[in-house]
Length: 253
Image (cartoon, rainbow, N blue to C red):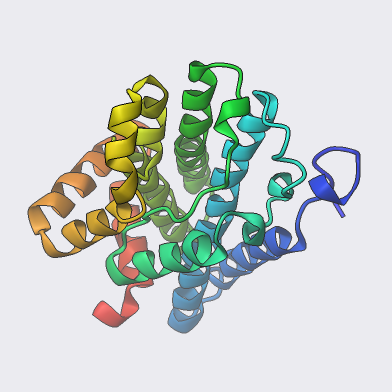
């Protein structure tokens, strides 16, 4: 089994993560068959398994950055294993984001890894830890967009929609809303009074954002418009991403 660093099971790559990678690869293979059922199943698997892979990488990047910036507990909690069940709340980290994606195509993040922020070296380190996750989503989007021109059309459609989802996740996460990474970037520079005032609302703010995006179409249109602009700027093909979206939400056709 692969290892992120020598030194035992606390940093050994999780079989759950490897299984998600294998499922994503299997979805890619299915899209190569000349069958509408196989292509649809392949794209659905690519999006769901690929999104879960990116959730693991998102949280891992938070943990690894915190580890490098002085948090002594990250490794002991198993955060460096890429095991999604080791994070703060598997239901919030894994189940809700998948449901959000299925219901509204909105890649809203879930529960995060617990970081001992008081052990980090400086305020800039705290901000960097929060920023690390969204940056991983953006990097994944760029890598997927670069890969798309070299794969068959159906697979390219699935990968393009997955890339657009990564951009949406990046845009959502950097919003300065309590509970999201954008707020975490700002938090070290806020007064104690501001933090105490906001703290009771932090667990509910992301869910409220999802409801607003789901029920208030101008907000959703603005979000998707911004994400589309960023996606196009990274070299993404919006027409292919829309084709992938259409295949993924096959029950809406």
